[in-house]
Amino acid sequence: MTNADTLVNSPLLPMSERSPTTTADVSWHSQDSDFAAKQSAQSWPQTLLMINVTGFLLGYYAMHNQWIQLAWFLLMSSAFFLSGGYPGFSQSLRRDRWLAAFAGLVFLLLVRSSIIDSFGVSVSGLWLGWLKAGLLVGAMMMIWQAGTVARVARILGLPLAVTATATAIGSVIIFYVLDPNAVLGSRLNNWFVYGGWNSVCTGMTFGFAATWAVFGWIKAAVPRERTFWFVMAVILLWATLMTLSRGALLGLVAGQVAIFCARGWRISRRPLILFVSCILAFQFSAPLISRLDVQKVSQRLGVTKETATQQMIVSGDIADNPAARFIKRGDNGRFIIYGAALGSMTTWQDWFFGKGLWASNDSWSCSLYWNPEHMHSVFVDALVRGGVPTFVLFIALLGWGLYRAWVLARHGEELWLMLACYGISGLVFDGDSAFSLLSIPRFETLILWVPLVIASARYTLRDYPGGGLDLGQSKTLS
Image (cartoon, rainbow, N blue to C red; front, top):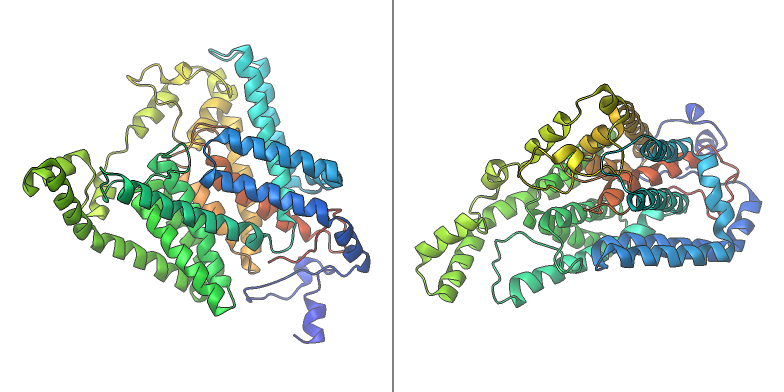
């Protein structure tokens, strides 16, 4: 790069005056000599910060339940604050308008739910609701600070992808090899969470990790490293497909579309070819998997292969044609749930104020013949519990976050746009509340807020080219 190029693209100039670029690795570098000394002085808090956030994210793959994950987060956060990390933590809301808007929306919902009567609310439910939402905001402030660290995509992504790959392989071995009643065609669950996290949640989290691994593959410069990321990406894509989660598949497609729109065919062709190849391989291997399962089941049950085939098809464990199964499989009552939830909004107060974050499920599900536990869509949940104004603000917040991720993607940091599009698309027809850290499915925070918060942090760095953020890390976007 010439001196002229360096001057034109200097981080000291506003974005509107910089020359456009199409290179994959664009960096905004700090020019202050004092910043290096500040970085060295705060290296220990930064180390604790990244350990904390990394462990928190790995909790969605390898910690048995949310309480272990929460204990990790609280203990490591305490160590981080005691080491002197609070000043940087407290700056996040003041420096980032998007994050402040996110916290403001959560607080608005909390106030509404506290002062306006909600059906079936209890004192314990009220305090628990404040705790869950407060933990969400605190976690996002911590993750925001981690997002300002140089090479955050690699620091967080490598252990996340490795852990997800290991849990995927371990779950396959446990459920398909060691289990005496194993059926290879059954939907994959993550054994390391709850002893078998349901296939939808497993698919959503594995698909998120697969998207991250694909990004690591296309960004890797060293052949050995590129091969390592490629192997993880293939394993995680295959594991996601084995869950037969349509939300995860929709999210993967959205991630592919996002990188194509932001960077064009030259950057997106390899991820697209890999994605399509894995789908085709999974589709064409299904008949072989079915035959092996039929043979194993018939031997175990002492029945003919024809009988075993019929039994397994009826139970939905064997699918000779996964594509057809994806299409023909029912919606599992989702649209009935959506209809019941929207039908329960019978007054103008319901439409304007909503039913409240911690209103009893009976306030919207009483017309159903079963208890669905949650609404299976963060968007429907936001509308029913917060009303139309909250829903509009929620959509606006997501759009604002996507814009920031889009700007980063256009400058070579495509990961956050890919992950954000994955999460938003996957949560159209799944998920519980977007405003709680401890929801029933749990994964909303991971696939929705984490990429948007980090994208906003990276975007905000552009406004402080001289090291104005007292965070103890370099400004390199990588």
